[in-house]
Image 1 (tube, rainbow, N blue to C red):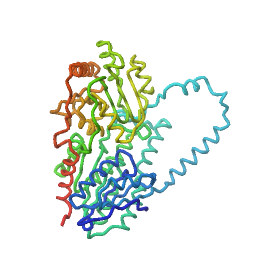
Image 2: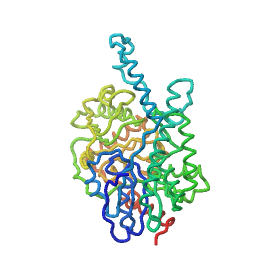
Image 3: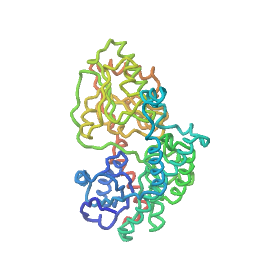
Length: 472
């Protein structure tokens, strides 16, 4: 175990602390680390110190910046994951297969193989839960089952090292509870084991549904993964003093699955921060913007088709309307997003760019007339960028199912919600907002309600924790 950094303790933070198991945490810049990075400030304001245990295989280059962003009373420990025997065997097998293929002449490659290298991949990146099959009559089916087992085993092995690390710092006079933030979901099993070992309350903070997962990455897309998830989740829920879902839809799913624990299952969304925003662009081109990852089934084709309709109906040039994307833009249906724009006849209207640092991403969003969020077919999750979008004076278009967590969050606001594939509905929204923009109407930020605030959500969480742990 390495101690990445420690911010000096002050006041009562020496006397009451929480163990936090968050595989992702600064300096790891994965989105999953943001939740408890932000909650740390509000915990410190209430006199709580945190001992955070995170993964060890991240760059140490950003430690100074990560430390400055956190309050006093936070210690962060990096825990390396051991290499499993099954992983070593797998790597040795792949090396052997690669050596066996090395003698194959490129010129002997079939015409079909050459074409397949140029064509988009036919293999999807993820599979909906409803489409999962055992498929044990094919090599791919067996590989998925193997990788599903490995997915659980790797984090479980990391958890064994976390338990050893916690034993080195645990103090029964100051550590009042253990909090787990997942995914990776086996973090919750680690918290359950720590709770049992030290007889302290266990707070299970679920950033995404576990046994209720809606899509799985193709490599682990097997019913075996879901069965393993249900088994481990039930054991964790049984031990947990508090189960936290990060959307109301996810909370309802958990309450239905565990009816005897309904009173201990609460909703705490991520929430919007209150840092200063960049200045907003006024007037000019109607800019439809999306910042963030386009992946899984977050498909912008219906948006492109609707924009094409509006462009044609209003005889617009790229100076009148543009669609701008930054972030990790995976292929849509196997094709680059630029190719999809060309197929819809609007390539001159679509601009793309790579991921940007957070401040630059905010500046990009500040130039938008309309901000788009995409949930795909996901019903229980809210795209993280939604809580940034609600802060800007821009129209919001949420491409989400009407019954989704995103739609539920945006109820009673001026945001527009349309099903991801509803071209007609999206066209109507774009046309309406474009003509309002042309008439000089300026949208207002919709995130003024307390429920959108991360501070408010942190208060809900800390109130619930303090009811279940020894505070004095």
